[in-house]
Length: 434
Ligand code: UGA
Image (cartoon, rainbow, N blue to C red):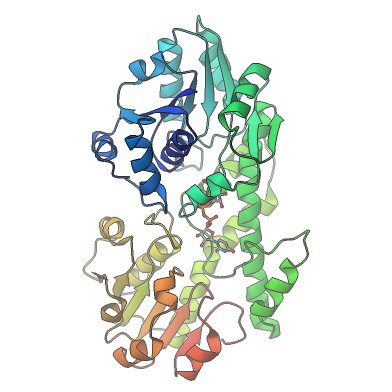
């Protein structure tokens, strides 16, 4: 199939490369010249495990090319995939300006019947509005399909090939069948439904996962009061298949470009209809409070005074396996530490460059080597559970620090007995150690 993918961010680039790898002929459209140059030089603008190999392979076998010229790219396309950004606005609404601009252009350029596939995350009701406002005005037949993605950053290529389901939202049977064909090599359930329901599946999925995280964080907090241990509780709760084991890991809470944005977006939609989505509101509040709870633990351990204290911050990306720092708990912690007057020694395997622009202060230094970062520090905050950090030589780390050797494990990731035996003042969430 000839497919044009508009936008080569996380979603667009993974989709473009993986579809090209399945034998489709892909044109990736990117208007940012720096990104376009990188892609043409076979360099991925984002870090994603396994992506470079696929990118090189599909460029070599001629199944993908990149351009900034949408008009030419659309000439040969059977299908146009929209994968442009939909960031949050300050009032929590989703900024659809890039979607509107692309929809308008597609409508103006269409010179033959076309199927438009929406992969960007857009609020329920958007597809209907786009059809009414733009696509139905074209002289050509433009069919619309909502096809949300469920890829995790850092695992996106793996997720593409191992997804639990493919959601195909369309009232047009022919267009929906084109999507069956597009994903013919993926032997997973392909679920057909209307456009608005498909859009809702995406928001409901992310909101539910965020709910699981906030729920287990509340249970972990309660474990601290009653003297239970979340390490025993969470896995046992998750063994009930109706609940499931995943996303029951307590810590500093969720970050990233998806859960924070999508929970805000869903809350906004609910409030637009006058519906008080109380559970979602609580999920978001718990998530914000969790970072403050972590800071309180640190403060208490450091005599309620962080001024001039040297704190090593291990982890700036919002989770391991990515260089993405959007809404990262590590970045929030850095900002809080800086505002308390601490000297922050930050370290991350991939996210130093992006963090340096976000955290511009005399109170922070950036280190590639964790042993150098912890040197002479009073405390460490582990904000991202990179394996590189978990498997550090903790004896060597302690030897490089100064008293009182506080370690706030913001991800409950380090085996607690061994670390306590080394003499750390170890803090975590709900693990009967605090
Ligand atoms: C999330 C979803 O998992 C994907 O299915 C979805 O496609 C994607 O958003 C999206 O909408 O594009 P992602 O944001 O990449 O993926 O990362 P996750 O692995 O879901 O983690 C999100 C955050 O939750 C991270 O900060 C992580 O540290 C935190 N988390 C995760 C926890 O605090 N506890 C857990 O048990 C699991």
